[in-house]
Image (cartoon, rainbow, N blue to C red; front, top):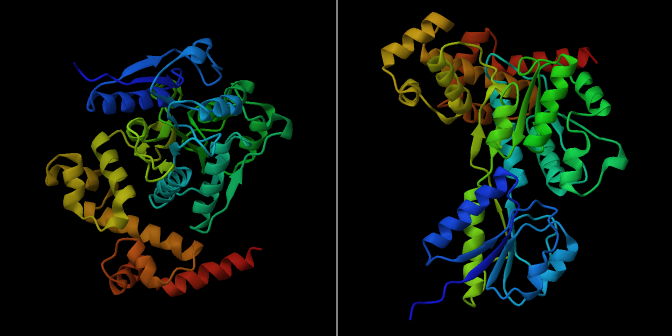
Length: 402
């Protein structure tokens, strides 16, 4: 007689790409571990407690808990339960979620690296839904990460009366932006890089910016989180977004549930999973060129110059011959691939000299130079001043401007 397949209920909303991708990760695990019978209904986060749950006799539950009453009910269930949301964090229910600190670090690094291209951001900002746990976590982490580069973050603070804990209500409160959000965006300095707590919030920012005449990405660069393809593609300009590792989250949650259904213990009861990558689209595209090959090469240099890359790595990335890529660089920029890598590294170094107290050795290392002496030589040749003198000069100038 064949082994009985486990029956697993999915209390996961189907209205967003993030949650649907979690389901794909769950399905992949089940497919490679003997197949499961799934019970899933179309729902959103506010789906409530279904009537059939009282008489349901299944083997496990995978859910996204945002209701304390439902969390208490599941905590007393006769079968194991795994939460893939992280809002309630019930002591009796293991949970997984996207790592807010890793999201902030990835976004900040992207924006800071952009500042080391010919386009430099003058400030950084965060816009979320204060009072929602994931938004507050990402806000604090982004502010901390930007602070590591010696910069401050402009953080949007709405009226206190709006700080409700219901995600769907907050997102639908002002779908096209509020007067308060308009005022905040209006007052942001030119060339501000903005991280939004998710793609819905970023879409609202883009709408407001267009309405009040702030250009994206020339004036404000906007990045969301979740990489919801439909939302990102329907933005004008199309939205850059941090892509969470939803497949790993779903797959791991299913693995945890499988262990519990087999009577095994979990090695730990919570897990924060870092995002996969940033999907670049037009809302942060600060490289102005109609040559797609050149843009691809410049993006690669912008994002990897500090990793000790050389011209061969750039050529390999774009997939054309060395001579073809070199011609594009000379015609458009007036310098070689190697020259552009050096320029990007020196631009990065100049920002770190101005904005941090890092030692020259540390700066050389952070910017991809082989040695500190090589960095000193190239810097002096480019700027006709030593790095130490440049730092002192900029600090004195800053003091004099206060």
